[in-house]
Length: 497
Image 1 (tube, rainbow, N blue to C red):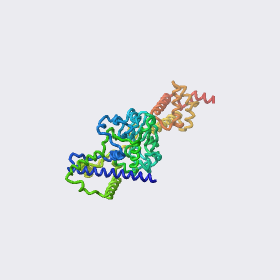
Image 2 (tube, one colour):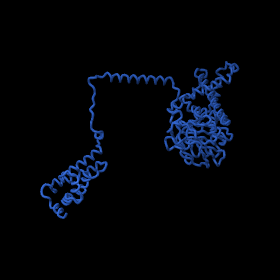
Image 3 (cartoon, one colour):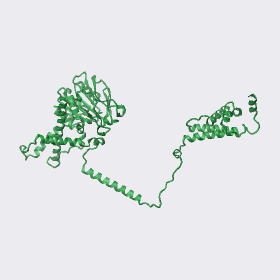
Image 4 (cartoon, rainbow, N blue to C red):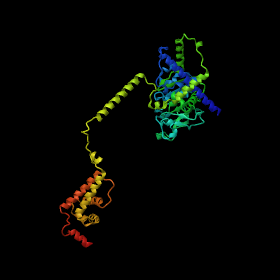
């Protein structure tokens, strides 16, 4: 219990130091904008989605950033930035598809390097791993963080792993998942640290790993950590859940073995050291206010610093960072863009107002009336419903049966027109094609007294029409007669009966 409390206090201390550091940076930026620091650049508008605090945490753990001249070389060959990879830590975030070749990973890991790949982009390294892009959405409310379905609140992970010491929940934002893992290069020994829950979309990622770590058997110091989401490392997400403690554990795991150098690459580009920038800005600020003696500046008490830090943390926690990250929009909007947006909105409202007004003031004596088409929708679209073919085929068959047998009794139809009936024998004997006549009678009986199919296609309806036309032509040519004496064939049949 004491270890967990200590870890949580360390996480809170990291947050306080980082936020105070950034608050000091904002003050320097404000001074620069008022003219006291000429040539200073304002902070980037997408600061919430950058990795300044994570890089700062690595520096506070004793690692030095790689020299800026080294990062000017080819980013795809980042393993060559270190004279001894066993003393280096590399973090790859964002789109890492161009900087994660199998050859580079093998060279770096086999020489004892420590590597973290955190990305929610699709990336495949043949024979090593395959990460699928998201976003993963929650199907259950208890894993949707603050009601956001694409932000997962994960609480079930490998408690024995050092990465989750003192961690109760990890918050993700539009994460992906690890689809496959392989033991090469260098015979990797994988351990699954965190899996996605079953109640997610898409279901293909349910239960699959979100975080996996591996040790290189050939090189005892080599280590690889895969995380299918880089949002827990961003500045704004450190204040949600236990992400701050989780990130500290990540840094400690990467720094195992007393390493000295690190490099962070986002979208294939190296991130400069934030502490180095702050030291440079502080030197510029001191030179700008050279008329003020450093001894004359009063030192704030510790209680005041803690109040300011807690106030800043409360403002960060209450901000709508998750909603802004979902739309991928920075929080700061310039005055020029704001004025443009207001003018466009006013113009759109004015146009809508005049359109509604002209429609309401139109002449009421001449209302527009559209002609309603009462035909079925299928007929209007050029198609006839299947039920029309069924009713038409049944009607044609029954009408022909009455015409051939001179009776309305369906039982007589089945007796006369079925095989063995008098009319059936006469038709087949007198017809030039007895087989065609037999098939025609079979179709007619099926739709008049039999059990017809549930759905009749247009081709089947045409066949029934041809059968009816054939039988009607035989009947109209007086090959079959029902008014007068019975034909010889019928008398012979009756005598035999």
